[in-house]
Amino acid sequence: MCPECSLLIPRQTNNDNTPIRSSGVNTKSNENINFKRGGSSLSTIQVDTCEEAGINNNNLLELIRSVVTSEISSLKDEFKSAFVPLKEELISIRQDFNSIKESLDFFSSKYDSLNSRIEKCEKELHQYSEKVSEFEEIKSTMQSILTENNNREQWARRSNIEIYGIPEQKNENLYSILQNVASKTSIKIDPGTDIDFITRVATKNKNKDGKKCKPIIVKFLCRWKKDEFLAQARKLKIRCNDLGFSNNYNNIYFNEHLTSTNKTLLLSVKKIAKEKNYKYVWIKNCSIMIRRSDNSAVLNISNMKDLNKIV
Image 1: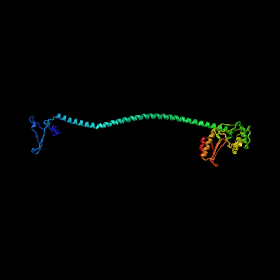
Image 2 (image 1 turned 90 degrees about the vertical axis):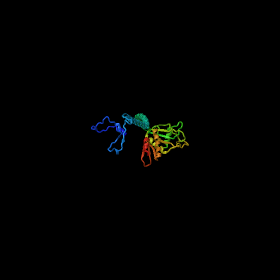
Image 3 (image 1 turned 45 degrees about the vertical axis):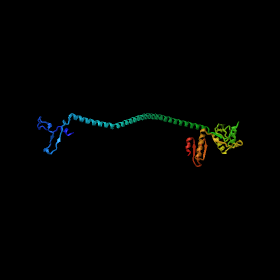
Image 4 (image 1 turned 135 degrees about the horizontal axis):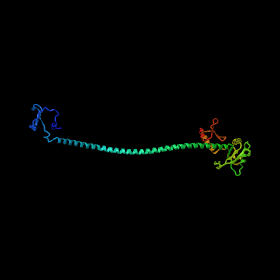
């Protein structure tokens, strides 16, 4: 505030005892004011009143208001200029936020869908597990039935022998062939009392000449007779020419009459025994036996699971 204007502000001192100047005094005549004694030695201050400067209270307020308004407007412009990039940044952030929100909504939807599918899969898996359990029970039951049926069928064949390698002829007499074989052994066979039946059965196997040779099945009425005949016939190692088939030196094989299941099992046992260097594989009472060496234990193989015994 200028010195002239500061003079307009009333002093805060108590001037109740100050005498009142008479109205006849001309206030404008005192232009020079000496504030200290000895005015001749002090500098004087020229004071122009606000009225002389052409400024009154209203003009002063307008001036202040104008200055303040100008400053505020300037600050406002500066703030606007400063907030423009901030506003743009906020818009960009809002857009990013909206994009993130859309992504979250999308993932939330996908999560709900995935969660629903997982629940469905878990339900189906549970049902599948139950079905698998039922299937395993059925499978176990079926396996038991098949095993029991195979054992029953093998038991029915306990008195049978299978002769493989004898050439098939027209109008052949199988009883005569059997008698011819028995003549090579020390066992006498009476077809009327010792044999239940004798026949040829179909086969998929071929002989060395590439021809299918149906094996001969002989059912004995007495099991011990069958065992004796089988043991001696195997020892003789009879060939076809020994039975009158000239120029035919093929071996004739005498075996236990195994079921198709046990024949398949026997082939598997022989294959593994060869791989594991087992020395003996044989059939005893329609059961498959295996032995690694002369001093090792004998293993009885009755099903496919027993193949794990061969180590």
